[in-house]
Image (cartoon, rainbow, N blue to C red; front, side, top):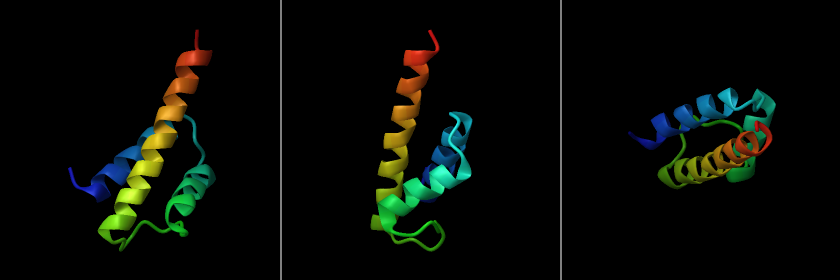
Length: 68
C-alpha cells in the first residue's frame, strides 16, 4: 500500500472513530501546515501518515477506555 492509499485509509478510520472532517483537516494542517493532501512530496505524506496514525491510536484508546 502506498502512502496516498494509507492516508485515505486513515481518514476513513478516523471518521469511523468519530472524528469530524474539520478535526481531520486540523490534524493534517498540524502535520504539514496545509489541509490539502493532493500533490504532497514523500516526506509530507509520511508526516501526514504519522500524525493520522497517532490520532487513530488515541481514538482507539478512548473507545477501549470508555466503552466498558
